[in-house]
Length: 580
Ligand SMILES: [Zn+2]
Image 1 (cartoon, rainbow, N blue to C red):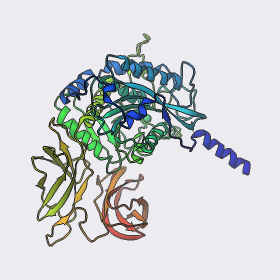
Image 2 (image 1 turned 90 degrees about the vertical axis):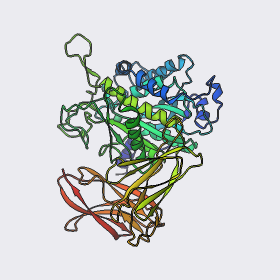
Image 3 (image 1 turned 90 degrees about the horizontal axis):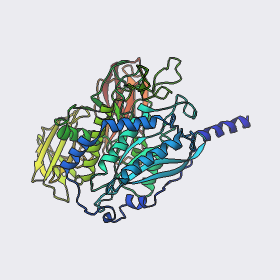
Image 4 (image 1 turned 180 degrees about the horizontal axis):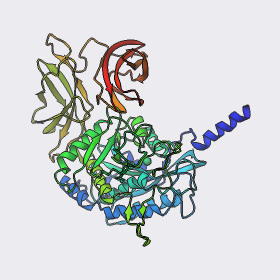
């Protein structure tokens, strides 16, 4: 009996050891750059930030689908990039990471490039190997007054259906050589420009065994006090064909093609603002100027159901992080299913096919133009975050039948934007405020409706800061009293209508906790119309706006009641409709 237990525990530790070490950069100058402890003049003769117009036209014109294709063809050679695979031969993770580092180095070697390549080494046991390397390149910012950094990343490792099968062919072209190629190309293009903030380009390993490389890096940043302003994670960003077993919420049907939509996944009140901000920048700066406009979809969940990505460990450490994923992917649904015969996470995730037997691939499973469009969206967003103004805060007051917004900003920017939304993840309304710091907006939204409001500053170059966290305005008193948004009622909690509603698969349920609750237990409880318990979701008890994501099971369409309960006592209930 005892022996069996020991074998089981041993097997677990071979898969992923839980011991944590913080890791280090093999190039020792990187840590001080990440902390803002460096002289930018070491890296640049002239410390003038590149103009918004130059960066924009540079990224739009210089991201080249042919380059993306060449990186993919090169990565295709290693046969597998499983994190536990060979570190010494021509195939496997060792050869692959040497390639990526050499690629960063080749960009660094070009004229006056500030790029510094480095491995980030850390120790965790993954598939029997303890020492691992993320591949990085850092581009120091010209302004060390604000030492916060921008991370553009993708996981570099691949796998077959069995996660520690280190010998099978796992070319991993869609998942995730596509994201890796995007990061390489942006490092090449963006390192020609000068940004205020430092940019860290990262290719992680161990994603397939539990987001390990990103977790090590996120914890390193947290432990060392590195201020991460935003993380752009790219995972499966090149495929356009819908596979039979793509993960929910999935594309329309097998063989369906979508080359003009990209999905943005995130969770939490700070990170969710990132997709909204990226979409606004795209609409304002790119949509009318690009040859093929893209649809950017803000997802209400953190990842496809049952899946995960490198943005999650960064969000867990308190950083703003999101994930780009193509609209149509080949899918990584249940590999244990006997009918499982799809490409992702099998040995079939290859670059393409030689359809006319001339020895050249001529049908590609990653669309290089689509991948290029996603690279431009990443590059422009990350660049604006790296040269844009500081974020601002605000207070809001319900006053009569309008809402008064007062912006809090020590920099005295000339312009601000106020965004509001109610029932969807997208903003409904945007107000431009010039020369003043307060503005009356909206009609009072009424007793049952929430307006979520956030603000951004706009600098002299027309660049918009990242968005403030959202606050809300609900009119809850009938006597017309002015109510500061922070403490609208004597109530303990306010429950909002779920979004989207009706929903299929998943929906977000928002609520506000109005006063400190100590150790009280907060739950969102879902029951059917007969009062039968469907699910109890643990929820945050912190003061302010919170949200939980509810993943509905299948075969239970209809109307359900959800309530917020504190220590088992229901406070408020609303109805939601599950349709499929
Ligand atoms: Zn992936």
